[in-house]
Length: 216
Ligand SMILES: C[S@@+](CC[C@H](N)C(=O)[O-])C[C@H]1O[C@@H](n2cnc3c(N)ncnc32)[C@H](O)[C@@H]1O
Image (cartoon, rainbow, N blue to C red; front, top):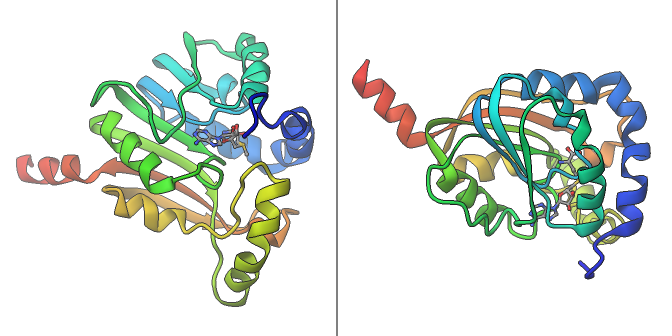
């Protein structure tokens, strides 16, 4: 990323997503973000598309390392009805103390982070026991589609500000020590096949699942 970030990508991002936001993405965001509670960290918050969906939470830290995206995020802070703080930390080096958030949110970002395993380890570290991970991502397909995604990824990364269509993000989430309590894999309408399918996952840190089972 240059010092100014991905300026062109940031400038067109909301327009690129406008139709999807109206037809399916906006309602997916709303139902996922409605499950956030307490102190919330959102990684790679982009232009702030989730901001207006936060309701009964104490505070939200929206982290966005790309200065071009962050400038737009700051302009959209008025759309939030909850206290919001902006941070520039990348997901791989969050810098917050251990167990400092009740909810961690990642939407359309684990495809773009440089190191998804490091990012998920950090997300796991800052989440409190019993906390919730809320994820909406496009992921690697299967069979021929996955092989096609592998071939196209080097080019796609360059035009899509680091986006990898071939990431098996669901496996990375489990590998990082999260238990998916709810998960749905789906093909949204009118989305290019190269960035399908999508997953929605609500996860808990594994340890807190084990603890709850021991107590009950
Ligand atoms: C496709 S946009 C998604 C933005 C937003 N989350 C949304 O749902 O619309 C991907 C975002 O990931 C951010 N990003 C890229 N690398 C990152 C990293 N290492 N840590 C955190 N965010 C990162 C980009 O700057 C960009 O804002």
